[in-house]
Image: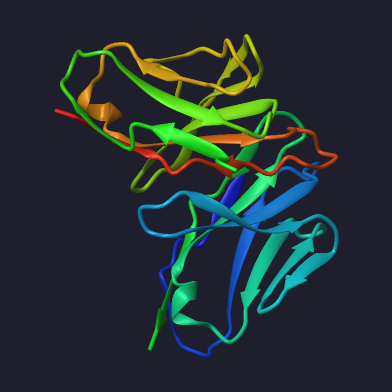
Length: 109
Length: 116
């Protein structure tokens, strides 16, 4: 089983829609979790950290389910500018962060 | 506040040539990382460094060499470039790798390398 798995998408949603991505991780000892956003041909940028039971920042909500070993990212009221690839990132007990391959989102007018 | 910079941003070279990609950060972060990103593979860790003169292999280190004589710089060298090393290379840094926090990574803008 891969350490971090994401549905690659693409998710094509209309403006104003709510969209959710899931990410599963294999190591139950993982403690830190992040969502990064990557625009086409640009570097990944930190979107949100998820340290405990969840985190909310405006239209974005990240949730952690330790029992099932997954984290989710919910985007409400999608904007055209939300179109990007969203990377799920997990901190293993030893070693650097592990990045998922990303989920591509296209918000359509 | 420059943050983390990479140079060159674009590079075209030929098979067999040596190429060095530069990475510089101004945050005094202890940890620095090199990734390559290719379609279908996502980000793959090449090498990382915990401090000056301390480096470790990542997932795909073959064909690459790193050094870290100063905390702020982490150059990546392709000793004899091959076509399979055509990729986008990202450098990143973080304050920590601890589970206790401050382990988020911040990325440079990337270097697009083409090996002909």
